[in-house]
Length: 171
Image (tube, rainbow, N blue to C red):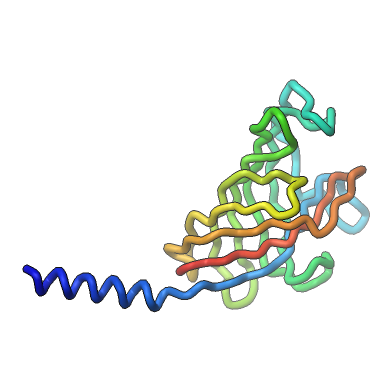
């Protein structure tokens, strides 16, 4: 019995020592106001009632559905790597932030056909927002980790944004 415990402990220690962290970086193009170059990739599907501090046009209870392009660089014409598909709910009454539930779906490169699942609070005006990675599929099956969202650019009139996403994974 003691030998079995020792062998199990050694196997767990070996597995922990061989776990590596993978870093990915890409840019999400969140387009709520269509332009001549880009159709809208986010839509409001439910409207809340009470305006939020800082922007009376954003309401507690608003729900948006997104299918945002994901590219290698911040320029919309940089190579596409996938889409960010999900929804965001304005679930905080005191600030402009959302509960984001999203799949980062890879449609090109070595991760084509795989996706990551991100779920957490995204407080838009924080410089860096940390959201947990709670799973994945394909090359990311069993993945855990975290993502860092940083606003690269934001247009206050159109509400269109480019967000840099750094992902740190253990697979």
